[in-house]
Image 1 (cartoon, one colour):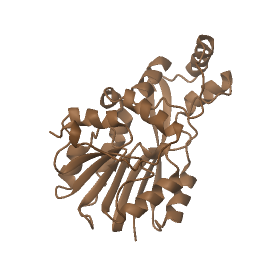
Image 2 (tube, one colour):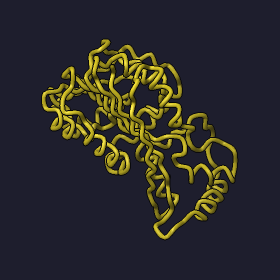
Image 3 (cartoon, rainbow, N blue to C red):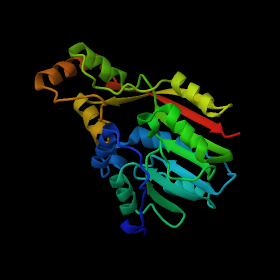
Length: 273
């Protein structure tokens, strides 16, 4: 098992922005509970693993925004000769992955920012990412991915788009205009960024996924347990009366299956020409 001393902490993390540290803090607090509660994220990731190419131009790959590296075994089974780096901004997530025995000689951790990777140009044959890059600027992160990919290297990612958590957002908007759900980039934003960065034949697919819950409290608990409860620009605490009013509004959306929570999920696959 990799020891904590062998986890590579990048000193080139040009990420002074307070918001990124806030994102990291939220995910760090969710490290131990992530695997148990990230049901949709893990399902999407498993489908993404099924899309892994059989061969890479360079035997090096990144799991970008890996969290607790839940796909480590499947990734190594799919590409047994490839050396992987599990990259995450949260040290706690990487430490949890280590505790779960997911690192080895061919699967190593690296604490770094996806928008400023401490890696050489054209050094990677694949960049894999599941539900991590929604916190990034599409233009910046895809340019960075393009930079580190070798010619004929591939990027394979999935992330939530604008419109995700719409029921939660709509219910809060009736109560007040404070931000309660992150404003995420849309499909057009990622499509434009991919083209501008040089991915000429990027395949982008949008899939709508709906989860159902027994209560709004269960939704809030799930988001907190996976670190997805961070909202950029939010300030102050939500009062009890506002919370109860929002819950009453959300209950109007209840179906026979429960309270819906919609995710607009982008699957992006592209090759560096």
